[in-house]
Image (tube, rainbow, N blue to C red):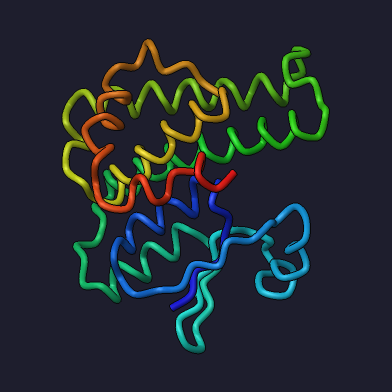
Length: 191
């Protein structure tokens, strides 16, 4: 198996953590620079991560997780957990939009409706995730907890959200900080 992605992506990190110590190759790409053509050739959706397993190519972290769950014999997600992933993905998608806009020199604090809607989505989704975290939904190290861990860590790294009013989500990150592969997949190590 080969996983293509970026060492700084929260979507890639969650798959790397799901894979854990499984034997696979990780190909870290510079998706906005030198390796853009590799991404174009491999994935028409231009998304990372991408998993290649024999003749099978899978283009999205959510689908990769489903594939790996079946391949590795893991317990499939419940509908409640699928909804948790929808909330996590909403925050990550809006966070990536904000980060790429800032990187492109766009003033995201100008009061434009588009950016206000992204921040509203982030706030509402994080509030819901924090409530679930407070109820213990992410105490065990399963895929939704992995995704929440990656989300909180990445959003703080990129200074996209202040979690100080959401101690239950910070507690998820603290609780799982010493799990296998967490340090090895830290985006701060990737640059």
